[in-house]
Image (cartoon, rainbow, N blue to C red; front, side):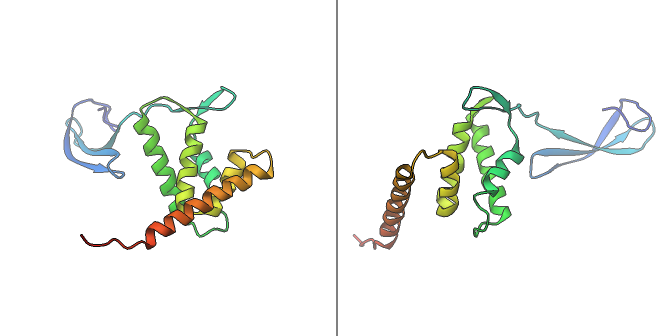
Length: 165
């Protein structure tokens, strides 16, 4: 590491610790030439993720775009900004676990719908109506029926009492 003060390359590490939620290593260094101390950070070099759109074009993944697409359907719903950030973090973790450099936008959209469906049905319907671009009212009603049936099944299983053996 080159000293920012005297530009010599000989130094010693005085302290090492993790930082930024374990995503970086912070090292405190001391230059062996001038004796001054400086801090360096070590990160894992992340791959550039490409999103392949429906028309076949690719563009770099943009976290802000995903946040925006989640904030719109969640407007005026009981979902906090922190919860939206958590959903995006979860999606990004799932994307990194796929281990691919090119991800179809369809995969990201399905991940968003899955998380919204589990969190808030109104936000889910808002997102799905735009994402799936329903062609007529019947498709929209079918989706609402499916959502209602899932909700009823979940309520039924929640209210069932398990009998002891």
